[in-house]
Image (cartoon, rainbow, N blue to C red):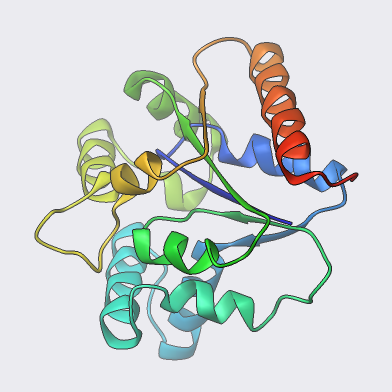
Length: 189
């Protein structure tokens, strides 16, 4: 089984990953694919540079380029959670797998900004105006089909979780989605 996660920055994707790790899923992050390529090319890992490199890879290798790189690392018969699907081409490629399910996550913008500040990661160091610019670009630029198109990806989701309540309620919603996935797939994990 492959679970894909898409959604706005700071909406709770990492919390969903923790849930699936407890279920013995293996974990891949789309940004790790881009960071690996950035290291090879000697590119500094800023959010903007990583966005630009992801756009370039999709333009050079096709819209599913990042997922293709991940698929080369994946072993048949194992369960995976893939975080950070940001282009419809990535999802279209994963839809070829029988047991692929896409979960979309969203939260109010102010909540998401406060969360990324609390995470304290260097890549998340930004002021509100930078966050708003990044969030807008990540959601989708109609003039750049190779770019981030999180809004379109969210529309393609099988499940949507709005993360605007307590962490307890969020975890309960993750569990409910998981139960629905198990019913749909017929698998016992």
